[in-house]
Amino acid sequence: MNKAERTMMLALTCNSSLFLSKLVIGIMTNSLAIVSDALHSLSDVFTDLLGLMGVRISERPEDEDHHYGHYKYEAIVSFTIGILILLSSTYIFKEGVERVLHGAVIEIRASSFLVVGIGSVVAYLLSKYEENVGKEVESLTLIAESKHALSDSISSFSVLICLFLISRGFWFLDVLVSLGIFLFLVRLGVKMVWKSSEILSDKSWIDPSVILEEVGKVEGVLDVHDVKSRWDGKNRYIEMHLVLRGDLSLEKAHEIADEVERIVERKFNAKATIHMEPGGEGKSE
Image (cartoon, rainbow, N blue to C red; front, side, top):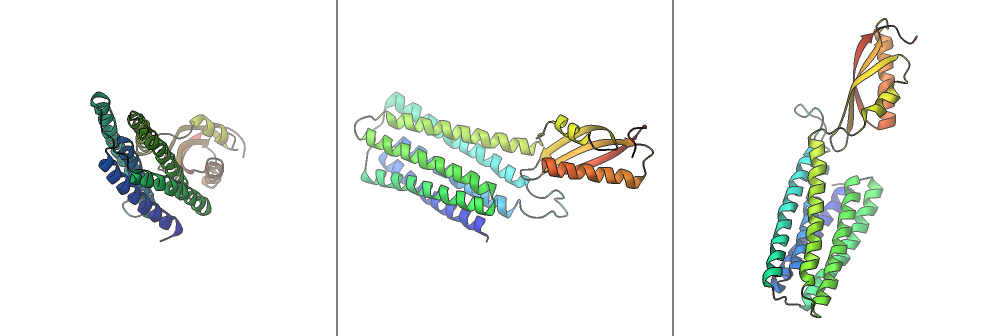
């Protein structure tokens, strides 16, 4: 198990503990804000699982059945997690509406402040650790998870303030804070579903005109068309048709295609697939 995996296992353990403790306290005290914060921690658990799966599955090399690798598995998991987050957020909305209409009795305990306060501190320390390790091992997944953990810390801190104000009689803040967490979870779920859908549907990631401009400068290229691009979550791919002079030797045409591949890799950090077509007279060799 490498350092990135150990860090994600640590995050998974911490967030699972925070989720369970917040959920128990939230149910015991009948606080929707704490239960909402628990669901926020649950979304962290999901993203930690995604990170682990991303490392262990998507990093597998190409095989006989997966010629382009396994990177899209991360997008599939991300899509599923996004849907689960959206479903969990509906509970917060439903419960909030019922409390506005019928009211609710909230019991404030010392354990409420303790659990939520510790949760805020742990989430903050975890976010800094994930950020540092992410930069060290150059892991975009860990850096992204550090931002998610930081948002969890801020969420817990806002709930902590909410509990203090509720103890002073401002009971309606329980609904308002839970509504804020609900909106955050909806935004997070929609973002995850949208981004993973773009990967799974092979959405183009670059304007073809940018590629046409660069490739069109290569000596020997008469025309470029049928430019397509896709992204699998890690690797970027570009396909194109190159029109070359019909009287070029196969060796020379291959040299031009190699030059185009190098440009695509250098300027766009992508892998190129090129189909060559013969054209009329054009630039001299």
